Image 1 (cartoon, rainbow, N blue to C red):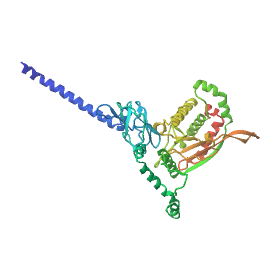
Image 2 (image 1 turned 120 degrees about the horizontal axis):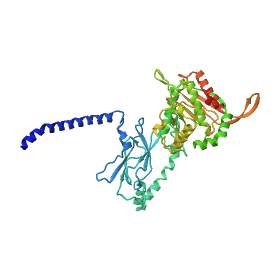
Image 3 (image 1 turned 135 degrees about the vertical axis):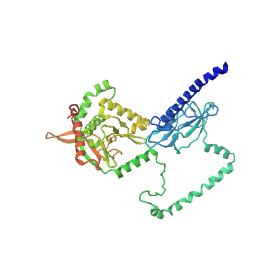
Image 4 (image 1 turned 90 degrees about the vertical axis):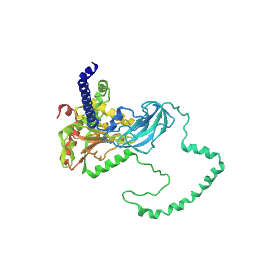
Length: 432
C-alpha cells in the first residue's frame, strides 16, 4: 500500500522539483542581467551601500576606499586623519583621498580602535583598496610614538655612540665649494620645457597636489585645442544695484536668501544663450552638438584650487532658486564636500574675478564647453550720460570663445545681450 502511494506521488514530486529548478534558473539569469546592465554598471557600487570588512571572529574590520564616481578610477591617499591606537566611531573619516576633481573621505566601517594602517600617504589607490584595520575589542592608546621616536630611546642608552654622528655632521660644512662646481654645466642640462633648477637656500620642493595637476593639464589642453578669442564690453551697474537695494529686505523675508549680483548675471547669460544657441553648443569630431538646456558652471576658488560646480537647468530657475543653488555649492566647496556629480557637465561657465579685485582679464575656456564669461570688479568711473559726465559703477565683461565654432558676430551679440539685460533688468520680465 505504501509503495503504491509513493509510486503515485512520484510524478507530482518530480514536477514540483522541476518547476522549482526552472524558476531558480531564471532567477539566476535575472540577477546576472541586473549585475551587468545599467542597474549596476560598476561592481564598486556595492561599496556605496554596504560596508566592506573581513574578519575571522567578527572583531576586526577593514576600512576601504569607497566608490569615487563613474569617471574617477583612482586617487592619491593625501593624508590620514587618525593614527594607530585612535578611537573612531562608525562612519567617522580616518583618511582623505585626493582625486582629479574632489577630495573624498575614507570612513570607518564600525566603531573601534585603529589597529594598523595598511596604505601609506602618497599611495595611488583605487576603489576597494584596504586602508586600515579597525578592532572593536582593542583599547585606545594613551600616547602615540612615531617610529623615529621609538629609535631614539634605544640609542640614548649608549651616549658614546650618539656623539659620533655629531662629529660626522661637521664634515658637510665643506659642501659650498662642491655646490659651485656643477653650476657651469647646469645650463647645458636644462631643457626649455622642464628646467632643472639648481638648489638654493630658503627654498623647498613639495609634490604637486593631484587637483593642481588636473587643473594645469586641463588649462593647457584648453589652450592647445581651442582657437580662443576674447571680446570685451562694459556694463553700467546702476539700475541693477538700485534694484537690489530696493528689494533686498523683501527678498530675504520671502525666500530666506540674500539677493546677489550673480543670480542676475546667470539669468542674463541664460537669455543670451537662448538668443545665440551656438555659444551653448560644442564641437564633437566633425559634428556640432546643440544643447537645448542650460547648465551654468560657476568658478569657485578654494584653498586647494579652482573648482567649477554646476547649476543644473538654470533656464528653468528663478532668482531665488539660483541664489540658493549658488550658496549651497559655495558652502560645499569651502567645506571640501563637493562630489563628482556636483561638477560634472556644464554648458557655459561664469567666472567672477571681481571678488578678488580683478579689473579685467581673459578667462580660459573650461573644456568641453565653448565659451566662458568673466566678471570683474565694480569701479566708479566717469561716463557720459545724456551729454553729462557722471560717476557710475562700471564693470568690464570679458567673453572668451572658441573661434572655430563661434564667429565674432555671435560673440559680440551674446555679450551685448548680457549688457542690455544687466543695465535694464526689466527686459527679463518683458522678454525683450
